[in-house]
Image (cartoon, rainbow, N blue to C red; front, top):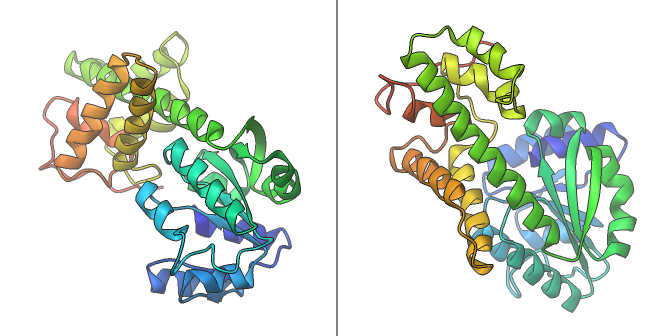
Length: 291
């Protein structure tokens, strides 16, 4: 996601000055491609750029790159703006904003819907939160990355909404896998079944993006099952904080947790169909994409 966002901004005329990744080979290749510096540490990124966009894996990684001291993006960050795009717990975004303010920087969340293709095309849907003045300052850049964006509110609020988006998406994905799996077991033609689904109350965006992939076992990763498990967990934690029972979200997380346990966590979320189609399982490899 981050690499494609950098390519997109470069195409739009922005000077992308620095890139950083723990995988130095990937960072070096991207830096050479877009004319940036592949930084050896996080403070170097902050020194070279006025606006720093982060896309990290989880809360632990976010806490580390915004550490209060040491090898941190916050070193020398006075006057900088951080745009944080990862799907992580809302409380982590709140904590990062507080740390940024302490050193004279601004931090907003720009939670992304869609996937790597949309990142490259600049057609993401962004849910934004944090200081509204900082959001207005950064809006011209965000407009080049997105087809649409919405300011949600204070720090943490956009992350809450993104957690809900992914919770519902994951439930829809698991439900579609069960519907197609049962249809296959009953002997129905799945091309026909997907067409019927598309014309009825069974229709969904997930049917469009994942239905055929479930059918032909094409699980090249756009949004991993491991991330689906993580994001469902964020939503469940929010539910617990409000004393809500969310049985569908819990069952869906159980399915994706099972995929991780079986070593299938790096398959796309459509890979949940491997658990629901009769005769499939972790011993059978998913088909490679032929597109």
